[in-house]
Amino acid sequence: MKILSSNRIIIPKVAFSYAGAIVGAGFTSGQELMQFFVSLESGIIPALILTTALFAVFGWATLNLSRIYQSTDYGSFLRCLLGPRIAQVFDILISVFLLGTLGIMMSAAGAVFEEHLGYSFQVGVGFISICIALVLISDVQGILWLNTVLMPAKFLIVLIVTVLIVFMPVSSLVAPDIMYIHPEPIGQSWYMASVLYVSYNLILGLAVLTSLGAANRSPKLSVAGIWGGLGLGAFAAIIVIALINNWPTVSQYQIPMLFLASQVHPVVKLLYTLVLVMGILTTAVACAYTLTIRSMHWIKSSYGLTLIFILILAMPLAQFGFARLVHVIYPLFGYAGIILLGCLAWRTYDSF
Image 1 (cartoon, rainbow, N blue to C red):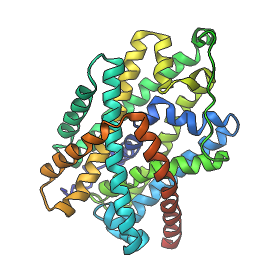
Image 2: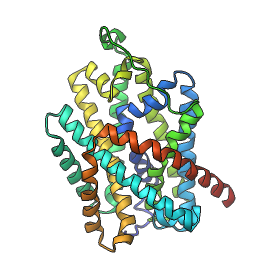
Image 3: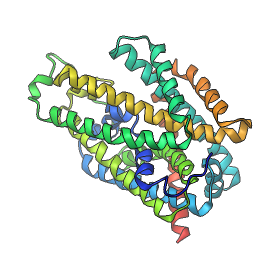
Image 4: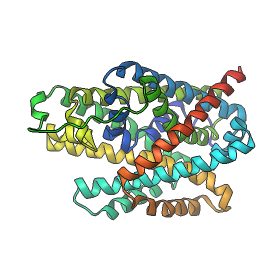
């Protein structure tokens, strides 16, 4: 990986990249937020506040510890954080998670192309794979500039769509004779839902932040984790507002935000489809980049060849389907991520 001068990696770029890695298909679709927060029905506000605080604090802690440890990627970071033996296990787990998430994003792209754009599933998988490769040709600058451009665009479009949804007549969104499905909340309490949501998302966030932090050792860079976490909280809040305003109608849909956008106007649906594709791309790029940087040490190959290998390896996973992959992969790593949160908290406290 090219080491970049401090004036080329600035706080907003890293903050956008942190948020962009997490704001993927599950986030922008509204499905994750519906399951973790809206389904709580009570405690939604404190849950969102806690989630925002955790994203901000642990984003800052990851960048700060990465600078202290002088880590070059998430593998070296984990060895300092957890010790060599436990780190080996988590190194493999995170690599599997990154590969699985990359496969989920490819599968999501295929689903969007097949269900909403009228093309085949494989066209969507191929399209997103080519986009990932094109973005990452320029190494770390590709992921930084992609998120610097797309994250504000995603936030603006989601904000516009949410405002339109909130101010629509509620009756126009309710289908007749509908049987509502109330999804079971994740966790037994609002604070457990928050912790689990942050824990599995931070696995990807940690991998991205340690890779980007390796290119810049400035102590000032740590504040990017705070800004990224606050941005994630704001992003989640505006989507949750739209879902709450139309609950429980949205509970029957796999992509509730796209359904709501379609009720406003076909053009609004097209705009939100664009947001989904952008969310898929930013998360997929983050996964591909961090996994490529880590895998170069294992397979002893160049950056370009390793990137192509990773993309080819993820393509078969996409064939299992978006919903099935999310159901299997995310809950498993949510509980594993709690260990990382605990270690990050302890090591940060111990560093003072």
